[in-house]
Length: 455
Ligand code: UGA
Image (cartoon, rainbow, N blue to C red):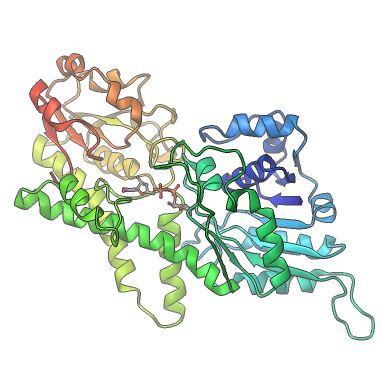
């Protein structure tokens, strides 16, 4: 099938590449010339395991093309994905400027029947709004009735991929959600995803618990429900994490171990074991934005989202709780050297947006600490911390002369640190494992003053 993806950010690039991989003819469009030039050469602007290889493979097999020519991408392809960013405005609402721009372009250039797919996370009702903008901008109208002569259908197809495992999540999703009032559009979308739905794309999803042999469930619904599913899913996952973090804080006081508690409750299939890892809280470009946006949408209808508001508060507190632990251990922060292992908001990504590590570093810097940080992929400190954080070349440097080390992101390679060796470099062997990732017993045996979260 002939597909265009407008917007080559995380979601657009992964979706376009994976659709090409399952045999479709895909044009990826972006207005950023430099980005398109480097994508044409097979260089990808983000760190996502496996993506660069897949992009190059599909470029060379001529199923994947990158361009800035949006007109051509709209005219030649039958399915147009809108995958541009919807960043949060200062009031928490999603900024729809880019979506509007794309919809106008579609209206200007539409030349026959198209399916317009909303992949960007958009406020509830945006599907109908996109339809309206396209209709307003179509030039081809009936002279007598003023009606638009060119037909199109809008489908909401929310994205559930996670950074760091985006390819596996796309090929082996838990479900595919399609929202539209048009049966024809829904049938076409199911055809588009058929190799994924039937799990015969040839891709083996190693990251999943087991190889999937069953068909992927497709949720066919209306536009609004589909848009709501996206917000409700992300907000539920954020709630799950804030909940387990709150329980972790109680565990710590009463002497229970949150890792065992998570295991004990997670084995109940009604609860489920995923997203029950307690730690320094959730971040990234999705949960913070989507939880806030859902609250804002609800507020417009006079509904106060008390659970979601608390979920956000607990998350903010969780980051500060680590700072309090540092205070408890070091007493005076001023003049102390603190190492931070991991900057990205989670492992296997270079994304530092709303990373808990940054809030923690900011607070400690403001309290007068010297911060040394290391991340396997992120090699610069965020703008506001630029001159105040020393970026180290390897994890060992973090320990050198430090009074305390915090593990902020659970990168797999941190398990390989020679903790017996680096303990000798430290001024004081304090270690806060902000993700309950390291072997507590081992580290205590070596001589660390180990502190996890909720254990
Ligand atoms: C999230 C959703 O998981 C995806 O399904 C969704 O498609 C995506 O947002 C999006 O809306 O685009 P992502 O932001 O990539 O994906 O990251 P997650 O893996 O969900 O992690 C989010 C945060 O929660 C991270 O800071 C992570 O460290 C934290 N987390 C996750 C925990 O603290 N504990 C857990 O048990 C799991």
